[in-house]
Length: 258
Image (cartoon, rainbow, N blue to C red; front, side, top):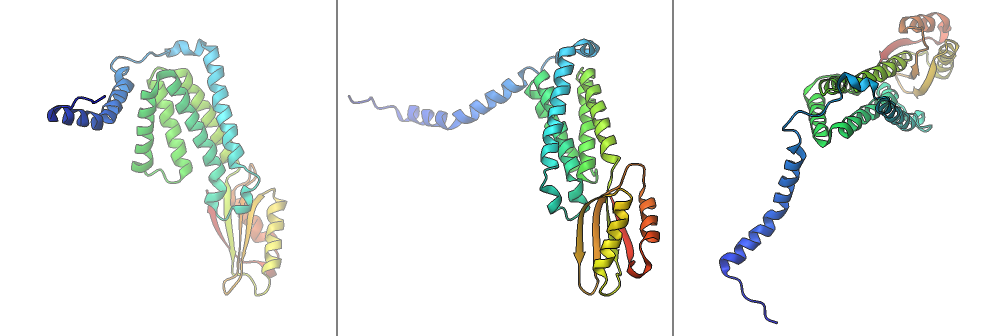
């Protein structure tokens, strides 16, 4: 069967339609995404604190995200590859970002994808336009921004849950801050003895050593990355290292604290 020939103008129109169809579909999808944002979003308000089912579900989701982030961050193989203070601090960053992602997921589940677009826009602005310092500080900044956002969206109960869990996480993280001390100017040929003496003092004061690196050469040095015990400050450990290490194996201390 021979198909009828199309007029040149009609054929050109159909070709253009085929080319524009994907773009039109994307535009229609984007319009559908924001169609629900023309009016006020439904909000639970202060009555949300009486929604026990939602609060239990939200807390469960956030705690699950924290556990999953901790499983990755505190993988048994991680300490073997830690070389710097920043790497020692990364498990906390993983947990905080997993928590932030869970808050976004709960908010999107409540209000729809339009909230996800807003949150990711805010996150990009904070990450690239705000000098928050470390990745840890950026995570905290995003967490408090999310708490304010969900409070403004009429979910005060989710805002309170977010703030309480973030507060507990920060308290736990900062109770054992990571430190890096570099011992330089070691006596010639005594690097091994010096490292043993400094390690013994740190362990005697309940410091958890994460990594130990020896650097030989003209400027021999030993680097320790460890966590301070609860209730003891950097000054306290510094004094202990200066006073309790035998004089014949002492070096100069250079500190870096997260």
